[in-house]
Length: 539
Image (cartoon, rainbow, N blue to C red; front, side, top):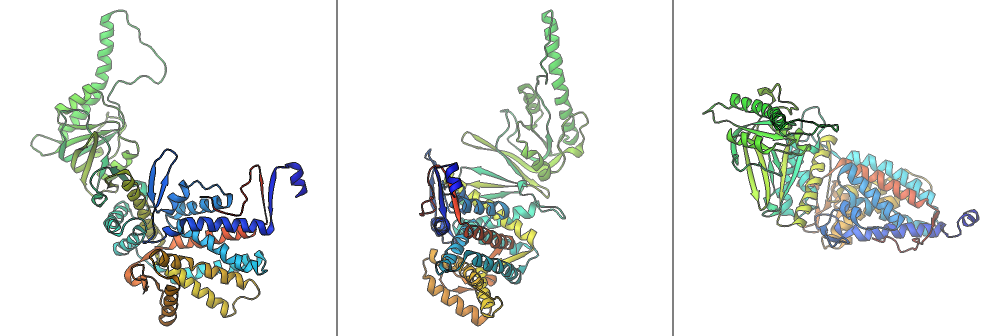
């Protein structure tokens, strides 16, 4: 310590019990901040940026990302929580609550003289046992649509109003099932999420195709076509400058005119090849039509030629939509028009333009077996759209997790309560000797924070609810959870309330690791301005 002070006299050092008090105070501060957001009955928080932008949310990941948390310990917990969301897509709020409660329960024993090392040894034993209990309680799932609907509904009801959640549930499930391919990993990027400030959030829909956020650039082009062949290309239909600096010199106006004509002819040849393909696949009276969706530009003269042929042409399409288009409509993206064949074309039953104020949207719908789809989020204002969008993201991840895990876990706080009961029985049966048993007890008690908070946020007395759960669990030997509507005991498996297996597994590992590391901190050093006041999570 003296060496540190001599090297930097301004360094501030917190030792032993003071360092532990700082960490516990910070963890409990973050816990108190986010506690009221847990579960379907959780409240919202309004975040106001320095520029005055407002965001209303109860998503723990958003709160941890965007809240200006300055305390180093609180910031560490926030980063661990957001890492949970990055890995599994859910469980952020629960992680914060569990870390805070583990430290709080450990503090009770430490104040009675128990060394933190013995507590952490008990945590390690409890973590291993908790993973065994998780495997025992989890139920195998074959990923059928009914189970996926139940999992998605459970996740979405914790993010948005239950009526909106029930509307979004089949949308997110069908979106994931549409892009699911046998023996291939599911890529959620193939689900395009498009926003439209229009109508209400209840009008959010699943488009089995693609929605582009721009329209055709020629007034005479058709605004709606049926039975359309889709040419997805990355070809320039406009004059392009050379990649290197170069110049052309001419001696007379005639030579300049020839040069201009040659440049134009170069583009005309490309346009004519596309028109020739259109005439080949769409003979008169066939009822077929032709659409070009190009990543590069199309000049006005080329647009005019396409319009005269009844071709609907879109330019400057986003790169990310190129792969989605071919998966939704079929065919393949082409980089050249030299050898255009019918095999390269996709097909859509309907392509039409929708104008909303100054914005244009192009819908590509009625595709045959689309492997890329679009979730069109509607809402009256920006706040609502962002809230629904965040919920949709979490719903998609929840469905994906079930398909990849092959297991589901009873929700409504049922797993955490069962974990408490089994760990306490594990201790009372004498399976662990020595003082580390107190660490296992602290671990078991900490996990009760989840069912307690669910009951508290629903407006019920936590002690009454815990007593009911204990009585029912010990009598029926069934996994029981908290009914947030009545405050009574429920059997989540019978009501289709499921959590993700990987979310629970990651929670157990992460909260145990972070809590253990924080308990073993016996010295905090910071050079410069003080932030070591025991007052905790400056959120």
